[in-house]
Image (cartoon, rainbow, N blue to C red; front, side, top):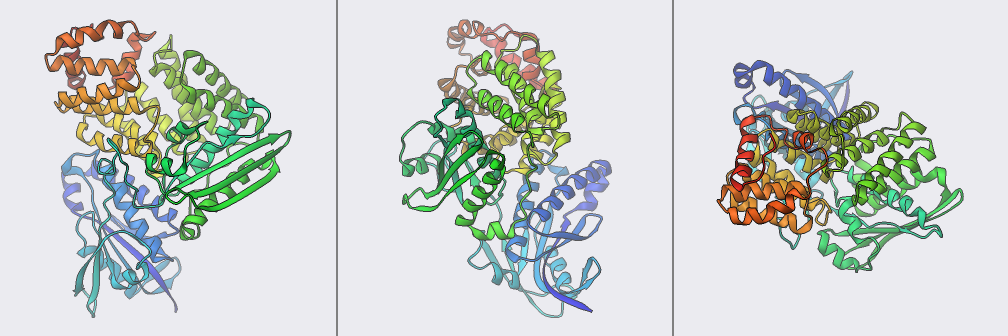
Length: 585
């Protein structure tokens, strides 16, 4: 009989019989989705599920730290997903963790260690986590989650009392952390900003390459769930500026800064990188890489792992991080993709998007299986429609849907592809499917500000107006100086509009317009002013709004207002009518 010590996580749905009795098909569909999320997170943290029956599961971990981290990640993910469901259909798991001796029986584990974990989950509250004293001893000083001692408990069929502790897993409120108004508070996990790598090449044309390398490093770091990584859009606000790292740390609310440079000459590339503690300015790590250009992906991986290892080695050792699939073996396709992405991020004129789309298509022509090129083509086509530059929204919508579908098919593990699919569902008038794609993207990368923004949009269109605010606030915290801040504020305003908080809607609309006077921002402000009977202010805004009408206005409105419930769209149009603005039906 083989025995070993193992960390066991047991989970069970609270009130599952009630959920099934009320609506069997919905309950089973939700359980299938949640089980997939749980399985993903268990695997990500180096565990394996070895038993499941109906609404319960049992998993094994080699590390108590990783087991508790997995439990917290599960509860946070399911809490986020439950917000999309009616209150009476929400599915909450109780989780219990124990460290104990188990008997190995093939792929299965048996014995007292497993039984205690199962009994601990019975003690836990719905959406709660209870751990044994043995697990508590192993994670002492290694995790920052608050824990409450519940005393020694007599558990069913367990012959001895078991010390029980409750883990408080709720994540930090982005508003309390300063998302809407600074100063920003440091998150409760290692926080990092990667500044744009400086192009040291003689050729200024290589700027796109340095920016692309920076973006790839940010993406790689953001896949570490227990890091807080500032979005690329905010990091790039410091491009070409001489700013003290201490000030950047305060501006972005982070503890660590990564900076570096790139010099490319022929087939050779030199990349330098350094990690700095923002508050003290102390350099914690530095490295130089001299390689062939074909080794650029290896450089990205090594640099990322060195940064993580310098901050928190246990995450690097313990966490089974999702392996990013290699983008492409065709360097010409990769460079075309980086050029297109560089132009997309400029977002200045219609010409930028025309050129960006051309480069994305070229990358796809060079490598039809290059998922990231399809993903960026979808995003650029959507952006062209959204900014009102498309002269045929239906044509661009059809192409972007096909590109997004291809991107997801090529790499189901890429969070950016799921975000692109979220946009595709907007143009396809399918807001519930957009919610699911945004959720998938956040499951894969909790640091993806775009996905949080997409989830907020999608919730508005499904009628979950109050629930839309949290992901929108989180998007602002993950990207405090984002060029898209005007858009996030506009969606916050639209949420408040539908909640009947018209004064708040005006406040956030005006904040968004102070950053960029986009067409849809003006329209949301007009609707809010109309509901407040402030027609005089609305009349002053109408001529400016009508002078910036998108090219294909009829189809533009269709993709920008994909409400599931027609009454919500009518509520929005009602405000515009009261403001005296010509309504598009």
